[in-house]
Length: 612
Image (cartoon, rainbow, N blue to C red; front, side):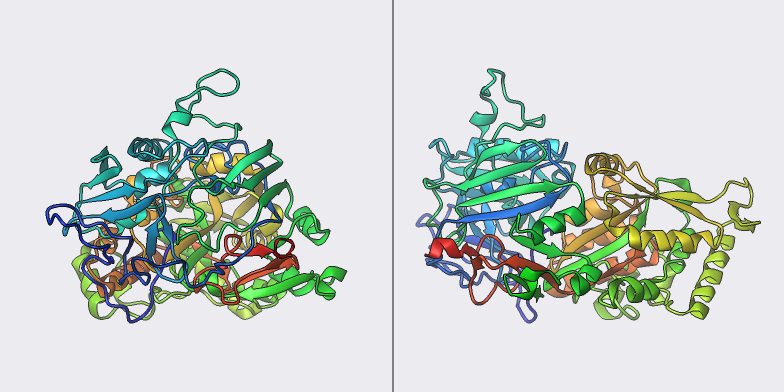
């Protein structure tokens, strides 16, 4: 499940929902204020606001942000082109996530949600007060149009909602989604996530007199129902959003204390170093630091020394997320199909040396697709996890039962030499030999070469030493850096040998695993199956993850999936840290206690200038 989380000790109820007062007619559906996948909802009918907000936060002031690369579309549905940052500010969804719960959402456009005991469908009832920015009501037709176009135009959402077969109007304010599986308790939850767009706006005529087309990119400011509106656009360079004084949902419990900035402004930069210089100069207000070396040595400028720029290391956003950051070979390329080759490539990556020389030992090597969470596999499988793996024993690598996954350990010359020898031995087992100074296919004589595709020079300092290590065993690995537009297009069409990826997970994985690793996504352009995985054992375990009936089974099936993914050596694991480094100009205030699982930025922060 993309975007949510788990507290230990919670008991999973059958429906994982809290009810609104029951309707008088027992045959009518029972609508609830929200939905939770794991455990019961924390907030009950009639709640005033989330506990972590400041309900009296002032509105106003301007927040200046940045992004890298460029943009060429404001269309929030279409997966084509380079979408602009922040466009979600202009659009509401059916539900809104709570940041102090693992996997809970409460009504936003929808005042309630209902589904039967077997979870074969879900019905959302829209609020009567929900309005578009032009004052017209948000209708079931808008929701159906948005859902159908999302599945049609966004390959990820097509996979994410693959078990949702139909959306239909079942009342004046009701939309019912039908499922082709039963007891998939995640489906009602994730249906709250897609952006709801205006059917009548998209089927209308633009300022140029031509009909609008949701299947194409656009730079026309798109009308939404959300708290902000797009007021100015400089294509590829800047965009400005302003808070709507007439926003219909400003007083909803899920919105109280949020949406506090009067305006939010994005500026785009082509280079990460230039972008950081823009932050130092005060051209924008907030910076999330991803460079360990810069965090250690790059904040010696006057504003950081005298307190005008504040720095923090915050664990909240990562408490319920796991990350696999890795170099990922594309198995659609023949040279990467053999798992021994992929394992050998890991032996050439000397993490310990790079962590010391580049990152001031701030990172930890990733050893799980759910790194940093309780869902990460370790040791040998036991209990329920072992039982699940035995059910697919003929479809998974035998070493998952006998050999715990570990990364090679380097850091000194002897260990590094031993690792390279092991890499050469694995290549030999896979049918390659060293001839002179080249690793070649023993039968064809074809040299083993590949290209690592990057979208920024920022991580080149990690990748170039890796290519130098590979050269010592006869492998010519080159690095190519392309602009973000080209990178996105090549990623969507799987036109690469190897890429750098960071795949985020949650404590409640589910339908998104189909898009990451499922056979059905391997040839679907735009999916996130970047490795090219099509494996019956993994497909079987994904199904077990999605249909797990309780927390115990969910945890066990996820660990089993993690273990099998690792055993196939699909990636060269990189590194991560379990806190987020942020720096910001001292222009803001925020609630004294951040939500358990989020920075709350920018939604819950506010401008000091607005408080005056």
